[in-house]
Amino acid sequence: ARHPEAQSRVDSARTVVAGDALAAAQVERAQALLDEDVPRLLATRAAFQAAGCPYQAARTLLLAGGAHADRGRAALTSLGLDPITGRQEQRTEPPE
Image (cartoon, rainbow, N blue to C red; front, side, top):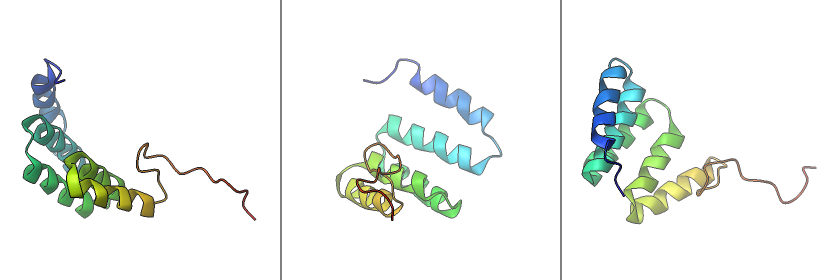
């Protein structure tokens, strides 16, 4: 369910992050999620890629859902992260 203050919080954040491209992309991603605008959401992925933030780019794909989410899970796995938690996967065998 959408938080009743979500839009005002995103609006406030937008003024705080002015001048910080990475933070602005995160706020833009939040706005796209609120608006349920998948093309706009995917556009934020490009900003994360350009900033050298593969985790955020992959996370954006997960948030987009559908086939995009499959690509996001694969990207997180390639980073050595659990696609569900975003944390480093635990080894099941001790290192040699």
